[in-house]
Length: 196
Image (cartoon, one colour):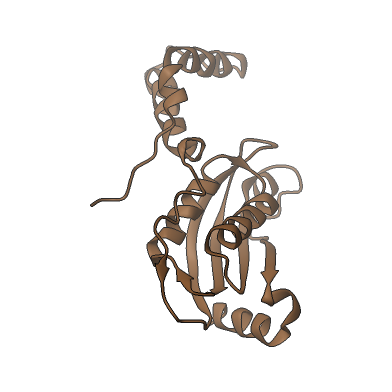
């Protein structure tokens, strides 16, 4: 069965309004909205919003799906999950990689579920710190592992293309739950393995 493809139905329900407002923004910044290259831009932007804001349609707690009973109680890492999000402060893109590690306590989830969880959480207006905590909290609440750790790397266009204009700078955030808070050896193992 193919993975569920989320789209933001609220955007679809308000397509004409959104297209009108995009056209107005283009006009207000000084563009000729009737020139050939911009004629379809409001419709394109609206279709893009259906996709990049699809996380509002996802039930993030349901995404991990059926957990499997498994006696494995050693570290599991899913790393280098690429994500794209939109900064809620400037509506500018930010993107990077997310690394997830957890020590199961009898329940595991299918590995692809972690990538789907990342998609659902990041495809909203967001801040990197919230993404990091939300993913850790959902895994901790749904799988009840001995511990979990999430590290998020992000490059923010609001820092690269405007404001301080520092391209290439990265922001790294982490969230630590359960055993990883108290067991420095487990934390160090996770951090060394995501650098491999």
